[in-house]
Length: 163
Image (cartoon, rainbow, N blue to C red; front, side, top):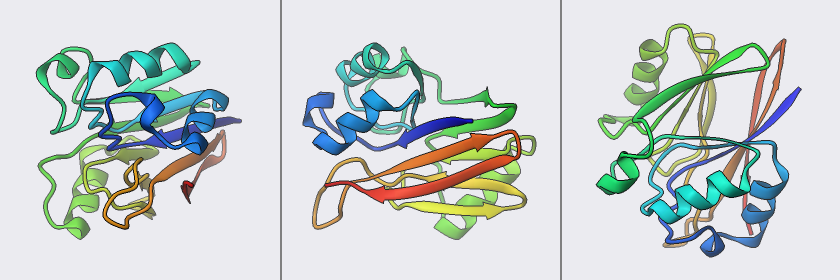
């Protein structure tokens, strides 16, 4: 069994700007996946240093120096499950976006994505579509993060509001 912390849309200059609860989760969780919009190389480098296992993709708000460090999309295997990661800035209407992602990754067991800043945790076309929401509080919208439990029998997702 593996635990994965999923974050996206941090939009901060340093990991230290994130909530204490999220910083603890980053330190305490074996796998950390960031679904894009870091906005600085500092955040990428800090996560690479802090995390035991780190996977990340760049987002539409990321400058060129971040884009040179990370792919636009990736897929990795955890506990025998294929997990795709993307920041789909090409978007579209939200209901259409999830359908597009499910079709784009036919072999994935889960698709983790950012960009919309809206938490999403649903199974579509037999795969988990999962957006952790935004990892910072703004305009009365709370910070959220996602937690996945991956076993050989499946992937379960949970989204938590952070203090």
